[in-house]
Image (tube, rainbow, N blue to C red; front, top):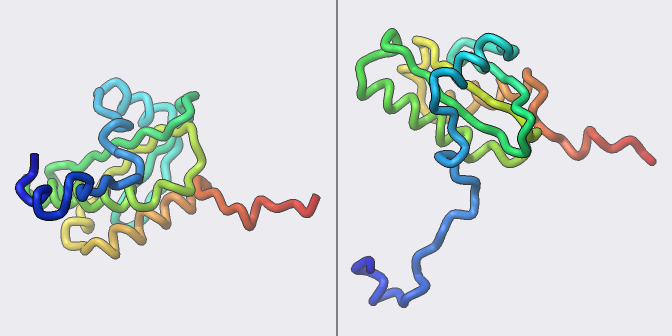
Length: 139
């Protein structure tokens, strides 16, 4: 029991309803290699995105940050920024893809807003963003 639950009441702890990114991660080296070999790539100055249809009803995400980007603290920061940007922007995406984000060297000096805009740009380039307004055919 958390110390503040007695003050706020038993049901005071709020749970975030967004998708838990950890459940749908790509972890195995073979899965990363499959996405690299068979997938399609899109890039901008800060990030590279590989996408591959996974045949499932979920999107899985993997993040790769090479040692060229910086030391471990910087690499971890970049991974956290990419992960959080994806978590907050994955709601309107098409389903059934494996996504691998690769951080490029310039991403080590970017802030959250710059990483988020780079990520959104790649998702738009890949055609993964579902726009209900654009899908309307008039019938």
